[in-house]
Image (cartoon, rainbow, N blue to C red; front, side, top):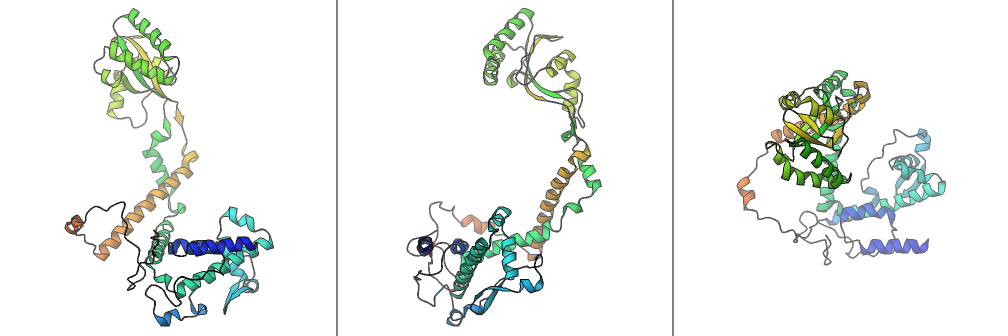
Length: 380
């Protein structure tokens, strides 16, 4: 245990000049003693002497929500640790544990493990308080991280809580289902290619050679097919597309396009019937039509689909919630930009040369500091 503590402490010391946001995230896992600060105390980015002299007890700390506690009010107020004049309560400890992911919470079933959690929490609080006392709360990177989290929480409350699954009505779900009926109900279909020649004997010979050369392997079938299309295919219209006939339907799907209607009506029935019998990458026997003799290749096969509204209602609701939230987010941002009277100077932006991906300006501390707190080691 002592070796582990010393190792944790040494690790924290070696990285104390690294990113402040990353350091404050890691301090919950390290010790608090044996780390001699590089900078004299008091010190910090843009910190005034009277602020540096602030005691830890006066540093503001975030409030913890205990509204979902399983403890009584009296139990929640029981102290579990003190930091100077500040008290950490049992209710706060319970709330902290409840904030952890389910897999993590399962690890704290014993009193010893919960006490270990408390020790790490206290270590974090002591280090966080000291970081604030020294002025790291004014560090530009910490401030930017705070702003990012603030924006995320703002959008979460303003957009996500404003558009809930319950806000999507059954009529809206029905309208979405009807407007996208092909996603849930459509006849069987096959994507076909054909090789057309005028002579029946030639067609049979080519069929046998294509089947033999393909060896029932999709990659070989496609390679052999391309070779024979280039050499023998007599339909000039489809030759550039390797003889593609497009998607052939058993019957017209809901909301069929004019192109689909035209193909369905113009395609000889013998080709449609033979093609729909094929599986993916299967080659048909020779098929006769008024245009000649055909060998068909199926490159995709889709079975009949019939899904009722009740089966996909929950899925549609989730999709519509996301769509509504995206729309609400865009509308919120546009409204705020209009209220703020945002303007852009594209001419000035054009004066800025493209950034050098290999060069990065050193990070600075708080306002008025003027020093590179990344240190001489050049931490990113």
